[in-house]
Image (cartoon, helix red, strand yellow):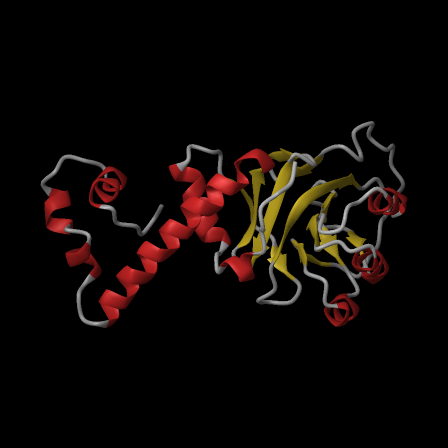
Length: 228
């Protein structure tokens, strides 16, 4: 499947916009609290899964079968007693044309990764590399577990300062369109607040309090946006 353009910076979107769009589209909001090694960097692309079992060979095998623009999504069970991705893996991913690396676990070689410049997202850092070699799962190159979510190459990952979010590839175009609409409404509301019109006034908050609706039902009725 050919994906629409997914670069968040080029589209002027954030993962927050996408998360709200998923809610409106009744698509599960699959997010993980991962942070970029370099604040302000963003990534997006088709998921390239790899389950770590104590050796980098699984990453090299995944990269060997990657398409340009993929994002290597590493599953290390969220471990915080070891790192599993360092500068050499990141450099290899960059040379193969990948758009980034997402790690459900820790990274190391932070200074070198920053110098490489490829977006990397992880739970944090630890100077210790893999502590043991474990049995490799049969699905090591077909699925990755990130927090509570199982992702595959049928998913697209987006990452920015707020974390990472996974969207089914088949739903990306619709989610991006909804996200753009949410962005435009929120920015218009923000401009009106700056000009002196309160958000409560814009969202007809007194009307909501007397309506018997949930706040989200009320927002959808009036075409407002603040939480989805």
